[in-house]
Amino acid sequence: MTNTATQNTEKRSAARKAASNPLTAGRLPGWSVWAIAAGGAAVAAVIIFLTTLGNADGFNWAGFVVLGLLFSVTAIYVVSLMTEGKRQATNRFVTSLVVSTFVLALIPLLSLIITLFTRGMARLDAEFFSSSMRGIVDVGGGAAHAIWGTALITLTATLLSVPIGILTAIYLVEYGKGWLKNAINFFVDVMTGIPSIVAGLFVFTMLFAATAFTPLTPATIKTGLAGALALTILMLPTVIRSSEEMLRLVPNELREASYALGTPKWVTIVKIVLPTALAGIATGVTLAISRVIGETAPLLIAAGVAQASLNTNLVKGQMMSLPVFVYQMTKGAGVAQQPWFEMAWTAALVLLIIVMVLNLIARAIAYYFRPKGER
Image (cartoon, rainbow, N blue to C red; front, top):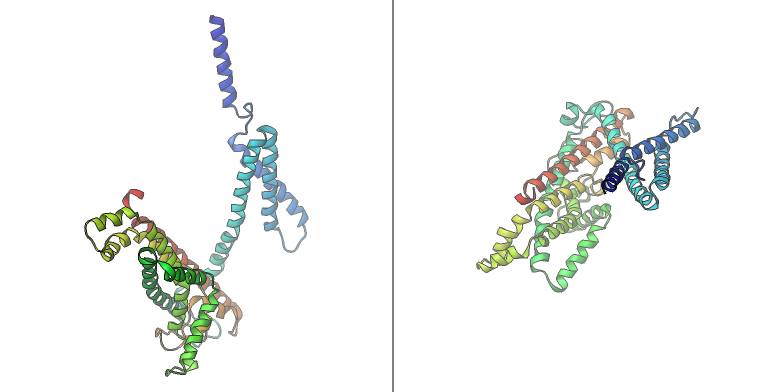
């Protein structure tokens, strides 16, 4: 009996040791996947180096990434199939494939950010933020007029679109029914998919038609206000849909509790529903601003491109914006093209930083205004 118990104990101990050793338990250790991936990358590097040897373009980084991921995914599947079996090999293959596609999607983004920072830092100085391009045809000048134009146009578009969008969302969620609700949903969906240049053409056409009945002239149609109206059209679908979804997430129990106390419906919406959905609504508004702040096509048509000096009057004269400024600089209209290209890269970098800040603000708003139990 004692010998049998001893043998059973020894068998259990051996089984535990075998399970603790991945190589003898039929599964790969955790570090093996990274080692296989590194081996695949090394093989790809050798192949790319040999094929591009003597090439004037140098090492083909794009080919290295694609070939390295292909070799790594294939090697992980083969090694896992030989060691762990088909089921675990399939799992590792799908996992490595998902990671590889994520890396492929991340590379262009990182490349864009690195390129913007390396080329945009050349003119990121005080003159860039304090001067305009008035009278500048060579070196010098800045984008102060474009920065102010972007701020004024975007702020005006926000002030116009946010109240309309939130009130429309309230109607759709709290009051809407029948054909009118269906019609609003249909037109919001249509507006979501229209090209941005159509918004600029629409505003320009409406203002041009108004010249027959008002003191406006075709030469005075392009203004900052016209650009703001074009951006308002583009912001409205995003604000409406994001606000609508946030209002629908408010529990009906909160509304019913308010109604049970005899509170009117509009007071319930103002005091209960809107504060509860405030974090999501504010996030949606901020993301809508980030979506339109880089639009170029509608502002080319509605706000104009000829303004080289600072203009803070939204209803008089053309108004420059940062996206249009980048377009104008890349045309190389100056005597020396290289300084203007540097200005374009710096303006694009500033625009990227603004969008990044807006997204960080959206995340901060979503964090600090959501219910305390969800933080």
